[in-house]
Image (tube, rainbow over all chains, first blue to last red):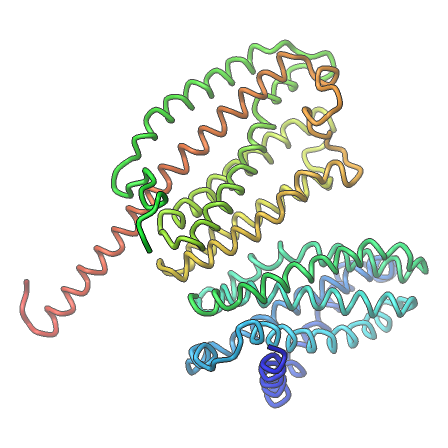
Length: 222
Length: 252
């Protein structure tokens, strides 16, 4: 299962490295979102600094939609989906591989966005242990749940409009928990983040379970 | 697979079930009784006319839970048995649950305005119920987007099961977080101190009435689903005959 996961993740990441869609389109999009927040909320009143954790995670959430769409758009052309089905790879491995590739891209994006938030919103970054742990857990949740729902909508002509409707309500707990954990870290009270990190952990466990055991059925019959 | 009890469940797709007429009458009578009793309830000192919403609002919320639970149960049965009846019942239950969630949010909002002073409050119970609404609308949209068949049935089933995970969060949100919304009327240590006996009776009657209405709606919606599938198959068959006639030049 792990070997198959590494194979699929390697394939997806290699495609991203070569096509540079992430670097040329997804990262600039996230950056534009950050700038738009500054236009919408008057930067001079300190609103941006106070709302920075929430704005950061909304930006990540919107960008993760693009990453998930992209992950399944790769399989939509040239019958790649059938290829994947016939490849004999363990479905749980395919799930973990696709989620892992999305997660790696999101983690890189989050590192860049954190710098952007510090630079553009003037947020003083601190509590790095909690920040990193939150990023890792929240990203695992986003990628896992996104991959489960991504495969449901994958074969459809309306997937671009349907996927946000399916995924955003599901990801709402991640947004909530990750924002609160960030607020705790930035406020210098990392202990307050423990409960929210626990919630993120439960979310990750739930969707990893659903993905590992349900992905085969979804891929096979959808 | 051998014929089992579930294959003989009284849900013949092309005929209304023999349960649907008695169920329909029973739910009509009970809903009428709930509404009548609700209107006959005395005005309470604190909330004047609005306390009568207790006959409608908690039962509607219960019916939304019931629909989600029924959809999940049908999903499990579908995934185990692969009987299309359960797929249709799953879709029907999700739609009925969506309707009752909308009624819950609407009546709650009407109740909140005079008692809390606002139409909407970002309170855990309200927020999670709104999230449930988003899930159910997603279920309906997902189903409409997919072509009929095994794939759609499996995807709908998995989606309904993930929606079930939200139920405990909606229900226990009032006890887990500090909330403006009161805790369950009956979950209180002494319900009689919380609400008068006649109010509790009207609410319990509402629970029974709305449950029956849900089951009745699910039966009819399932049947409609079966008819739709049949109509689609028929249209496809007609189109195939036409194309074949075009190709061979022979009209049947």
